[in-house]
Image 1 (cartoon, rainbow, N blue to C red):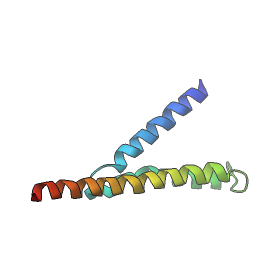
Image 2 (tube, rainbow, N blue to C red):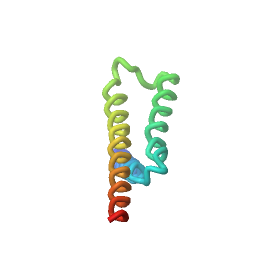
Image 3 (tube, one colour):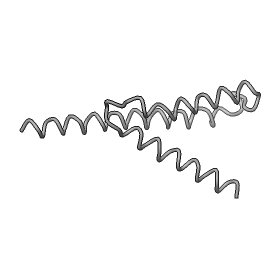
Image 4 (spheres, helix red, strand yellow):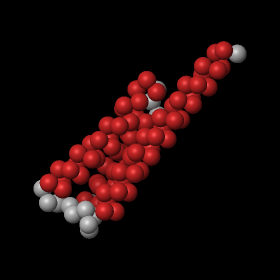
Length: 91
């Protein structure tokens, strides 16, 4: 049951993150909430000796890259959508 709950929570966080990343470019910072929380969790775990960078580097690098790549991709998609909307109004 613990594994199922972990997967459900992880999926919910990813869906929330993707949704926040695709908001209007005016609210670009919303997509950064999840990555900053993730980095905060990693720092907390590191200082409490729960993780070791040498052994747990995959758990640290992979999700961090995924969160930041989603943020960048979502921001670019939102900017493109905003530009397309502006072009449609000009025509």
